[in-house]
Image (cartoon, rainbow, N blue to C red; front, side):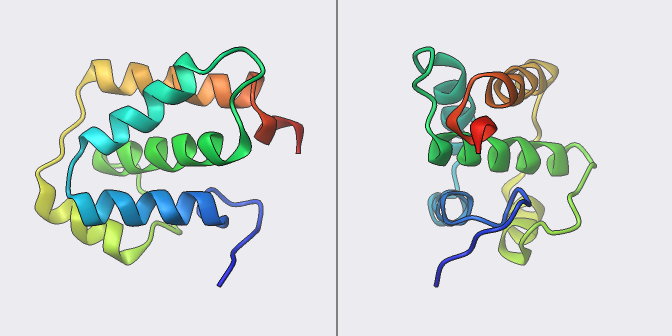
Length: 110
């Protein structure tokens, strides 16, 4: 089933990425999505990668106590059991990725 809306979690790319995070159980999945968004070539950050980076940023925010109202239950459970505790450097990475999505991504053009 496809999902599409204007919310962070209302698209297939974010849903697929969240499924990968929960299935892998690895917080490195978050760092990879954010780093990819930052390092993508100028004009090369496609909508799916941008959506994944935004989902990763929301998971990180939730881990820091700023939980999005639409955060899926399986991600809430993962956060409760994973021990994931992002550092200030992780937060800085997240902010940089979100800025890149906002300023230089296919998603920003939609």
